[in-house]
Length: 426
Image 1: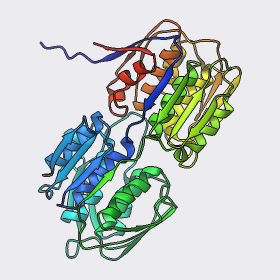
Image 2: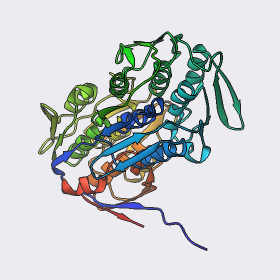
Image 3: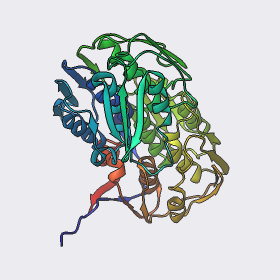
Image 4: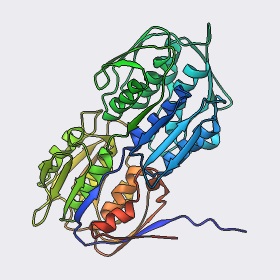
């Protein structure tokens, strides 16, 4: 019987990170932009694409749908050509990547029908697809749930029509899915209470290069006037603000100095303010951000996650590590996902004093963390445990790092370039 070995990180902590790191393209922008290529048969060239497991899954999904994909990870470039020949996104792929739900909108818009498996992905609570379904129904799609699949059909002449969609709650993937679907719909679509995230703006920018007519992306009201067809384009993926924040916090937690290059400081205002509140010296120079924590004490900061431009839920686990090491008591409140505290028990195994009370974690800072064997439950939890390991005394083993490979490009080589002691073991 063949045993399947799962990779782990072995980290020897206690070394201040010191150096510069190049920030990759954003996973959360790359995935919807890859899927928007479904909307055209012409050549789409994407640059600054991160080399991630989720990107490879997305490429496999597009190839299953009939697209021709040339992937050059060493150059961060993907070329996509040809029309989709299938309208089915299978469970085998969708179960590993929740972003696959965003194939639903472009598929039904381009082919007139779509069958997309209900999604899987990280174990961070329910992320319902009802917003996607409700919006597509508003645009004239008939939808039924059958055998674990969302089955959608554009009624009438096989083309969606414009609609006035009021989102019950802010949803990034919901906004993106419906925005893509509306580009080929007949007439005008208005999305109210739309997500404001930079990744939504980046998707709209790419779609407009393809000939779409989208106004208001990055505001709560997005207006899309449908067109007959979309063309190809060349587009560079926006910088990953979550990767940026993760390396800045790693530098702060280890009392080092880290500079992130090729990033977008304007997308990180809420986080940078909290890092300054934590007593880090933060400087911004064009597309570079430096966090200097040498000879400085970490101050506790109260954090409440919120949709952009508020504090990002994807940085909640990482900043909790800072509060675990701060000189005082603080709180971290999670308002986006109901099951995103699975890293807390693992951090406590490393000597943190963290207590969950409802959707809030009370953080009582300790002088230091101790290395331990811990296990990650999702992508950002993985990042928090790596940061904790880098700051801790002794050796930390982080299990289930396949979550991290979904969202951080070449993380161990980047950490080693900053002077961190991390290696992949089996």
